[in-house]
Length: 344
Image (cartoon, rainbow, N blue to C red; front, side):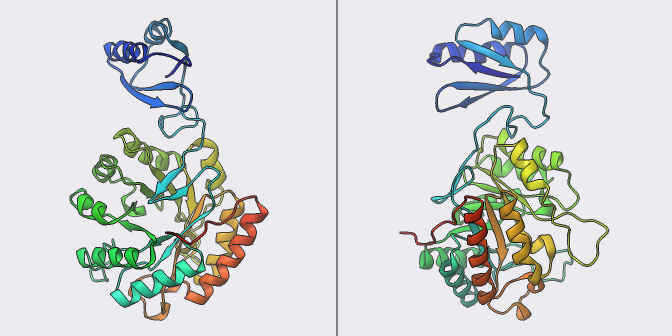
């Protein structure tokens, strides 16, 4: 259930409601709003509990919540959440946020060149993997801590915010010291220990949909992060695995407007993993923007033919700049400007 307090409810009244909820063995989660406070509850809620709480001073109404994902649901929070990634707003009515960069951090030169190129084309967040989960243990798995140092230098050089992946709970602290946004990759969407760990730190979390995950499973994974206290979650549609073999994945454009209806969290699209082919990235990026995405995640490399991972789906600097021109046109057509790349 969702307990909606009256406008002007006192802190004493709010505390009394929280205490009464706890007496029923239910976990309360305060949700401060711009005008009034709501209190979400988690656990089996009886009719007696709802009636007891609704009778307390300061309570406006008790609303049943039918969704299994509570904190992520629009039933609980109706207004769009805007997540700030080091000053770059993502979600709500904010300009389209574009996160771009190489799949893997391979070298200082490669990373700095890419950061400068994507910034010049309009990106406001640099994405790049220092730690990489790979299907084969023999594939390039990133530079690790050295890669984080390179990302920190790229941020100092360009002013771009940094988004990079974290693979295990033990790495969260080290990655969070450098990253402005921690990415949970598709393979780790249901790594619940990792979701708990990123939920216990304050940096924004970019959660990618698992390759075989339903929309409900995706939102329940977000719920793990939210339930631990971190409300700064960005959802990323990156394609799902189907019977089709001409593309790496099938980009589920349906998921973008559906998620926007079900949840208040920002939703972005990853057309690089969604297609696996560089020449499909721009068209699918345009489709994602037209469908209502709050941002894009695009792989860019100075020489895709020589990339150590995912070169076949990476754009050259020139192709990325051209795609950004098209993205800006579609964004404007649907009433959404692209973020200004210039940062102090």
